[in-house]
Amino acid sequence: MGTSTRSYTPIVLAFFAGIITTRILFPQSQGGIHHISKRTTDVQDLAAHAQPWVGSTEFHPYPPASPVNYDPTLFPSDIGYSGPTPTGGEPALLATAPAYPKLSSGGQGLLVVPDELSTNNFDILKRWGNLSPWYSNPVGTFGVEAGPEAPDGCSVTGLHLLHRHGARYPTRDTYSPSEPAAFGERIHAVGGNWTATGKLAFLNDWTFKLGGEVLTPFGRHQLFELGATVRLKYGNLLKNFTETNTLPVFRTESQDRMLASALNFAIGFFGYPFDGQYEQSITIESSKFNNTLAPYTTCLNAWHPKRGGRAGWFVTQWANRYLQPALKRINSLISGHQFEIPDIFAMQNLCAYETVALGYSSFCPLFTKEEWEGFDYSFDLNFWYTSGFGSPVGRAQGIGYVQELVARLTKTPIQTHNSTTNSTLDDNPITFPLDGRSLYVDATHEVTVVNVLTALNLSTLAATGPLPYDYIPENRSFIAHEVAPFATNVQFQLLSCASTTGEQIRVIVNDAPVPLSPLKYCPEETRYGLCPVDGFVSSLKEIIQDTDFAWACLGDYILPDGDAWLTVDGTPPPKHENFTVQGMGSASWEYEGWKWPLPY
Image (cartoon, rainbow, N blue to C red; front, side):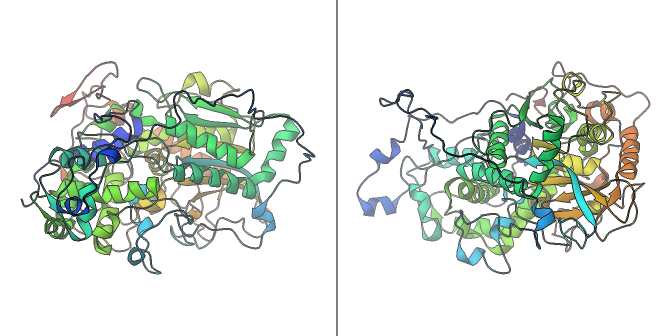
């Protein structure tokens, strides 16, 4: 059918919909996993045509609603007789081990991928953008030729950890043609009328087995493992809490996958049961509630296709280029139906999502290494232009967390709540302690991580400038799978060093330090990525002062498609004289059918 002319704006909006939606739109199903019982036993017929149920949703409702053998009185979780329970010394791997443990592969030995796509020179798990599992970035990834271990003569005194949730199921968005659920509905609608062969033959009997947005088993494992490794590296920081007779306060949001990620992290960090070992703050993730860990809920322009959602144009142009060979090749494997570009993009999405949910996907071998490079780059374009240095709302959405970080580092309450900070929670010393505690842990989404890196002005990530839509630049400085994979984590590491006066700080993204030299009051020191906390804070205070959240997130500017307007610091165009600020209470704007609030 040739190149699709469908708009890719829904692709980018779907990325965001998967971040803030609180209602899952499940396609209509006839229930349970009944599709299995209806399948023919005639193997010859099975191979001849796509089955009528192909593409339909298959789900397994577990646990049973009312199991007949459920009896907590006979199966209590604690019966006493626990034996000796003395605790040992806290681990401090950063100070005691001769080397730092690295996670070389995001699959962690749990995921299966085609051999030809997992070699010494190519790892498909690192070609899925924000759908990649996190792994340790190599030394020098961002320009600092050192690892995350404390430099000689330095000791770690504190940690502020910002991390993403683990691997999840996709959004159940049937409006975006590139989303897996929409692809399933389309082929289900024409099931029985076409035949797939060769590498695509599996599609004749394929059903959609993915849930919606909650953590997968692998995603739960990721956060448990992350919690355990942080305890091994930084467990000695808990001594601060014993000495002050306090508990750490960790934060997350109310979305299911966010709370589940935080609790799995806690089980890994504290062990089970974790009751009485820490306080879990759960912030509301919904429109009209300020939340620095979900800033898009009150940043209206994050959803506007001519402002924060402008990446759609770039992704459209790129997808229509890099997927043409795959479109032709895959269409040669099917008779009675022809795919379009959004279908092919959805198949690549399905490879990633099925792998992190089911352990393996037959969609993966359909594509070449070059096409996986293209898929990976589509996420670079998306995050650069919607959340990062190329977005007009990138800095504004991250500035609230920066304000909180400054408050924690200075032990000073936020003076002016003019962004996404929540005054109810942040002004309360119980829910937002500022008494110099040595450990803070915040769970968030990958877009927020990119927002924060942008707001921090870590401009080495933007050194190679705006991303083109017609080719992949060599040695580009912004790569989504390096900064925003599943379970991505940013360590704000505090250190005391014998050779310097005052506390030092480093920013470490997935085990690779990022240079702080772009910050105004940080030195041109790239060996370890260190900056005095005082200089770091002074730099951030100026950034906060220079950020206009109201204009960036609520202003009435309109940007042209494509590269007619570009930014490399995550800020919008200059404010015009008679600008208006849009309210959040109603549908105050509408553009090509998209309006606020979105119908999720």
